[in-house]
Length: 190
Image 1 (cartoon, rainbow, N blue to C red):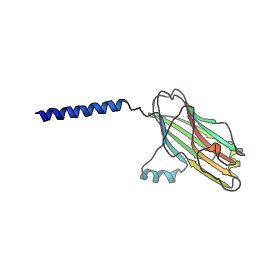
Image 2 (cartoon, one colour):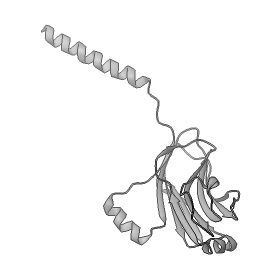
Image 3 (cartoon, rainbow, N blue to C red):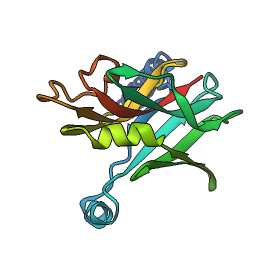
Image 4 (cartoon, helix red, strand yellow):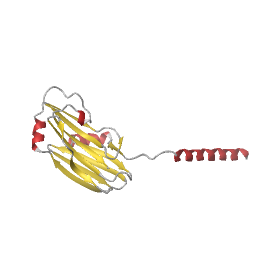
């Protein structure tokens, strides 16, 4: 009989310890990450539309606004962001985002609980012509989950062009790239 009581108190103590430990842990904040599809789905999607990227992001009370924007580089200088899609009064929750690049056009879709917001952005002809005249091009996409920091621009997809020699780095840090021309799709939360 004593053994049953001792076992009960040991289990109870262990449960209380777990409860106390969980009280000190913080909830994960808002994050953004690429959607990882199973191999079977990837094998179907890739040939159909290789220039489509899928993302998940979560928000908390600190995030109520999101802007997907395009930046163009001309002669090595990046312009100010031009909005593609903007959401205001966002609720706390999980969202899915799709970016699709078709020639000189970007389609952006953000969906939450079956409601989708879409927009299309057309790249200015002079930027598109300058990029197409590049001798070397390189594309880099967002790869790992990362926390969302309000007011911080997050590069999702960058395409670089260079008129001579090679592009020394392939990174999402478009501001420090050594390209002559290019495009960067970003998202900023606030």
